[in-house]
Length: 209
Image (tube, rainbow, N blue to C red; front, side, top):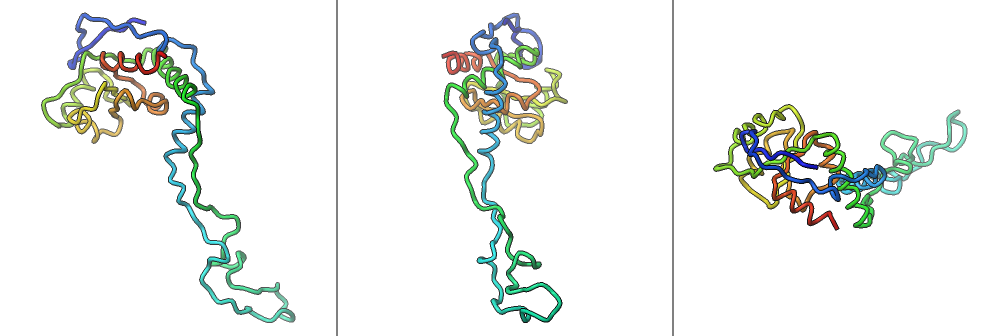
């Protein structure tokens, strides 16, 4: 698939880049995408949720009232789950939500997500992205020039650029990542995928195996 290369002003540079079929032209595997996204979201969970069981509640152990003759149910402890402030039955306990996925499956998932973006013509290729200073207005000018200001965008760079990253982080719908950190969730969560020509080469080297 051949895509025209644009500059920071959103104008064509006259150059074109070939998106490798081995990365951007696959028949997407939806189940692989599902598993990879599920793992990504699971890994975001802290798993620190906790409720107290009746043996962890601080309270008196005296019997509340006599066993018989009250006309009510038997009650042995204020810590019973039946009472307000008592322990919780089968409540949440700290746990690790992460699970393992094979490296090849994760690669298939990423390539499937990129293939969906290419199939829907939602990939924009830039010659390079460089700013002189850390200013949000520089990044705003970029997405305005590309006519994607109202859409969720994911800019993929070949290497970390502090100026570009910090210029984008105040924008809710904009995200900047390094090609080596590309994940299926971020690709699918973005409406438009912005790639530099060097990032395309980096992705090809990493995923075309």
